[in-house]
Image 1 (cartoon, rainbow, N blue to C red):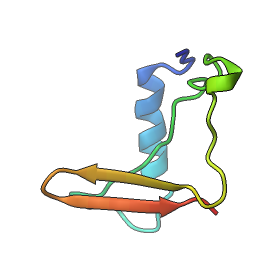
Image 2: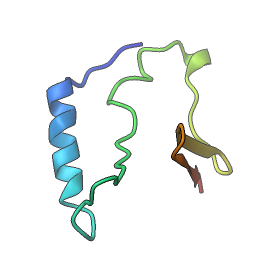
Image 3: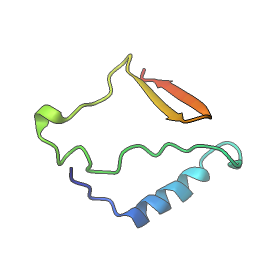
Length: 72
């Protein structure tokens, strides 16, 4: 896998995203930032998988629960 974005840039991205939400983040809020820029580009074409309409992304935390997002 190839990643062109540095971790310090990710920190800046998270800070920028928190200012774009409609309310101030609260303890326990989860902010999904997606995959770092260039992560999929380093994979062979046959292994590059993209979300398509109907796909569901599930994020879970043991003993807490899960979030589900459907791709439209």
